Length: 274
Image (tube, rainbow, N blue to C red; front, side, top):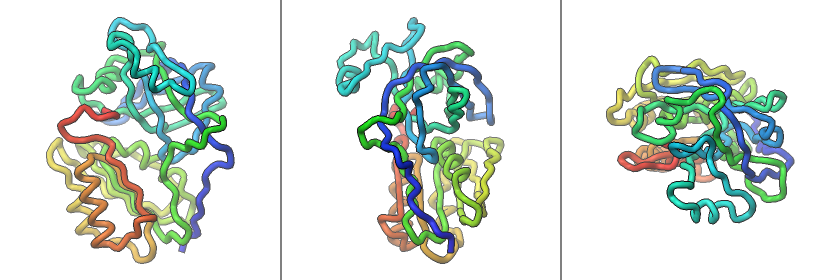
């Protein structure tokens, strides 16, 4: 059995606004790009790692940089901004953080101009401005990441589609040697597989949906899973996640407190992180 404890940072994290500029845009696979953001303002940014959530603020057409609100009432002030001023806000995963260089990496799923974030990254160039809402060491207890294995966990189950892949990659890279992880990742094409380095004993099942129905549920239903107590983390399209959660609770016997689930997006809707 792999001993697992909750390793949340001792500091309390709170979200504050940061300004950054694009330093590099790199195509990882045909349907995913990694954007490196940097700048002196990121000196105050910190991260809990794993599946750390952040908000990105994209400038509107004609704007050089997004118009950000700040302070305790930033969200109410953001909603009160006129439509021709209010930047597009979306939720993403902090995929990499190099504090010594004031840099972060964010991975984007590429799907043309069907969503504002995808449209932005397709045109992003070095020097472009963007806003972030990310953790800093302040006083409000907001952690912004959800991967907390319960004591006594024997193995880890991770499952999600391409929108969850950045978080899954971060989680796997955080697992120690001796940990066991069974992973199911659905991507648009076979060529969208990524190389993920982990010290743990990791088995990844890659599934290509080819822009058709999800194969995640059937694949996990048919899978032979390890014995012992699992800790499960699942994310992706809302309906798929709902059915996966039901299967893991009712048919696999995973305890509610050992299962985290999140619907990152909903098919047919302009969801938060598209």
